[in-house]
Length: 373
Image (cartoon, helix red, strand yellow):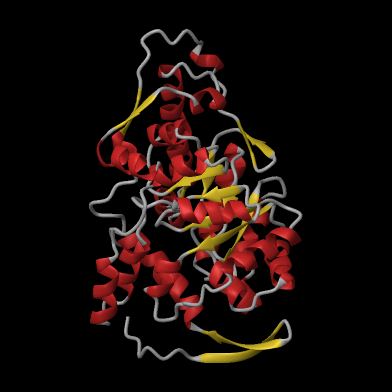
């Protein structure tokens, strides 16, 4: 896609101040969607770490497989399964059908769903329906709103947050941290000063749970300590090993050699999912483990490392875009069967017991954990 690098901008009055809004916001949403559908945008050599965690097999499970309980208590609600349909899209007309399919999936399995960043709809009210469709599908499903940390720093205030929540009648709100992604976008917002204070302000305002999440590069112990200091309870670690936003931007900027090369250099940047999950759980957070979770076995390992919920996005995208609901249902059914088998083979009658299942770390993951202690 040819791009002069100069955004066409519109001046609008926004909560009492003038801000510049780029038409590229909407186009960028579509570019991201198409790249995720058409290109290989997962990490190359770095894995989320599940391959270096072994759950110990039990030949004498001493439980009835049929009585295994996969329900989990999280975000103040009991869900049937510990699976979150994680943030994918919104903000472009093409994304409406995707969110509709995903919302129907969430309703079918009684699991939570998070929408993509709602910034686009705050900038252009005509795009609200691309997010609102999730709530229109059902008033009963648990919906998580989503706003970027860069927007909080750049001036979004309490009224904006209320709009984000009201747009979809959100049951919880996620603030996403994406410093690497911002660096790799021509349109990126690179001012993250006083972000912690902005998150603290939002936390005090909210009457619903607040989740702070990374978007694919993981959270360090230092990050988590800072979040703990301001009272954050829920984190989505968004670890390295799954979708690489650096990879996405390398394809998006193929017409800009320098930008593409920088993005390629950071393709595998970040902290593996299993590391951030383990650290966050040990620090007492309520953890959503996401980043490269592809099987029910991965889900089981994440929970065994302390997660209360696991987030999955990219694997659902193709079937959702093609409006293949049967395919989506089959995907979830496979995950559930794999997870339940793991629970049976680790003597875990419920999710709480799975959290204490015996496990062993190997290789680089073991070295990471030992180095962080």
